[in-house]
Figure 1 (cartoon, rainbow, N blue to C red):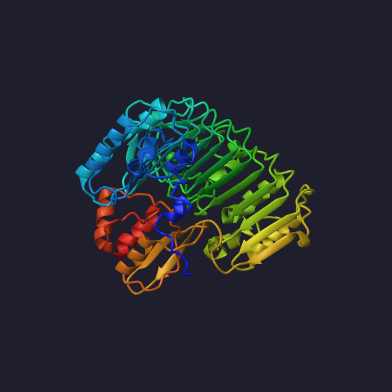
Figure 2: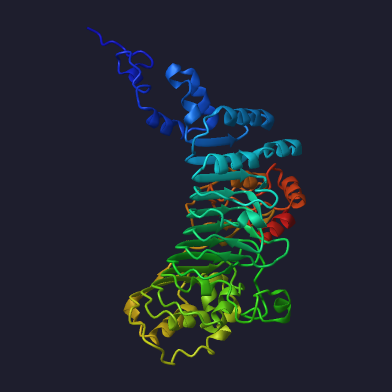
Amino acid sequence: MPKRRRKHGEEATGGSGEDLISALPDAILQVVLSLLPSDETVRTCVLSRRWRHLWKSTPALRIVQDGVRYKRALKQNDFVNYLLLFRDRLPLDECEISYRDRSGDREEYTEIFRFSSMWIDYAVSLCQARVLKVCIHNVGMFLMRGNSAFVSQFLRRVELAGVILWEHAIDFSGCPNLEDLNLCSSKIYGPKMSSQSVRRLSITRCTLNLDTGSRMGISAPSLVSLQLADVVGRAPVLESMPSLATAFIRLGGSYFDTCTHEAYGDCDECLAHDDYGGSNDSVLLQGLSGATNLELTSINPDMFVFRKDLKRCPTFSMLRTLLLNEWCVAADFGALVYFLQHTPVLEKLILQLRLDETKNSMAETYASCNPTVQFLVLKHLKVVEIRCHKEDEVVRQIVKILSTFGVSSDQIDVQVIQHTYFSPTVTRCRCAEAIVLCVASDAIFETTLCFQNVMRSMQLTHYTAQLPSELAFLLVEDALQERLGKQLGIMEAHLVQDWAALRILLEAG
């Protein structure tokens, strides 16, 4: 007898005609629905009577605009407003707002964000959302207009990308239970970012007070983990963080805090624009001095903040793992020696050196560093990793310095690596038409569509840098963005992370 073929949808009913999915408890169905965009969640009301009102009590609000679901922002705004009107006013686990504007229409841009602040207030204030995620692609959105700030007893996690935060909006003291704060590719303005409760803070690819060039303070005494990477503007001032365990700091995303004249930014030109706040104030390292794991890297060796902070003589009494790159070997290897002197319980040291980009003048500093002077023996140091492109005089000098601290050659592992493997570096794509500078990340390497489009528009058939898909590039000013877009022949000209790369692209166009 031939086998009977299953009818469409029979798998969901178990072959008996019974709807097994609808038989699940409401709590489980609501969890499933909460994973969908809100417009898809509402569509489930037509499945059966069992599903008619489930969308009203879904514990998540997900407003997603990608140019596919709604051709015009006006229609989406109408839908969301009716959604909020008719849904049950129950607590929300999560509110997510995501926009990707590709139209370039200013009226459309205005309409997109017409009700955004109201929706956020609805989720945070009325529905006690515990997680807030706002991700804006290609355009910036003002968050919390006026003098308003985030105020919620229930908010625990905030993720913001592509937004504009102004003064009061970076005061999170009104959220006593907030633990996770993630800011990415946003423009931030104000004297101080503060939170008494945040335990994990990440600020990546953001601009800080770019209009005034002043330093922003960060007050987060409960912080356990800190990530500060690729910010444009002056490095922020970190206040005391007694609970800090892990910190990743990567500087050099802009020309701020750089000095080509002196190692510490002490020339007249730098002092005229420096606002350390006082001769004895530290910007970064004093706030990081209690950490157990530190990664301190700089894209530009001319970045002087780390070296200048060391003159304030912080002691890293709890530090066990330390990663540094080539900035620590500039200026007579003074920074490297300082860390070896002021990390009494250090167990692992990692040095990542781009020797092919180190200044030629560094060769003149060898003689001024005297490795024969005996220092304290680092009794806890177990291993030193030196990752470099080639083993030359700089590496040999480092080995000599380490030996004065009682580090034997058996504890030193020199790894010669031919390709980029560490903090973002500048990769040069040479061709007949142009030299393109692009930033390659140390994250997962994969080619993005935008980067391919740029390469094609410039008639480049070969490229060596691949960018991670989630690398949200900083937006350039409208005039430069329009000019760059015309020169490269593409609609979106937001593919530049720092001004140095932008200038090269403009000149090459």
